[in-house]
Image (cartoon, rainbow, N blue to C red):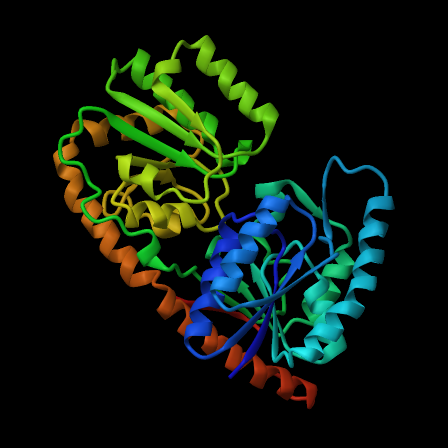
Length: 404
């Protein structure tokens, strides 16, 4: 039995946190033991919700005061960075106590925003796995607090896991010389499968775009495409559901555009929801308009829900969608191309059922959580072997490996 410590970057149940909880839950079922460190920052309701989920899964956890090692371009001065480094240094003492108490075998950091896992690994002399799920600069406009700190932390990391080839290439310079595995996410697919979700003759075509509301996610593109379909293609039997929370400024811009273009009756805005199954059941087409999607958990969930998926031909999205086979791709940022793809789909709706079935079957085969957990366990065993060989002075392979 392995004792695996997961260091989580946020208590908000967005994709990264949900993914690691599903992984840890599956590993618990397979006889391993999972432990979580969670940051104290966040809303009380989110913390309570997370506690219930972890208790139900039998996962031990502890909330601690630790902070990211990255900042936004707007952050002024060095004081916030010094504060984070100082607080992380203090927190490492508590982390060490729990790591030894829980008899941890492997430390797994779930996000590239935090270096503290690599620091803890060095203290307790246990291997460190670093899971990179985001393009810090491209997707979140985040910068390293210290490049030297990151290079040192990566040097203390036994294995880096990148969620897609796109992420591996994005961080290629920083990861040079590291042992990197590209491993697509796994899902508890039974949570997301909707049988008979494809509506053969909908009177109203419902388009769905969900996720964090910010410019990089491209919700504005979806709204503009709907306006184009309504006013130029004269399509009146569509409705876009935009689901999520995020940038108030970006959201206000979207709302203003909707009002100015007189498409209020064609766009519905809903707040972030943890459970999307009922909304997906009503949807016909799912849009993935992100400009730099690291992988595309939402894309897989949409395929399992029997929605026709239309996504950008860039980043992680194009690693999942094969144009015309299990979904459709459009040129990123090209509103006319997106409009044409949507119009084609709803104008040739009878042809979409075969595509939807192919998408669902391939998603079930490729992204099942059991298969994913098994591969992760293999990585953990390799990591333990590599770590102790390295400690004994032996060299080990440093390169880029891919796992389908």
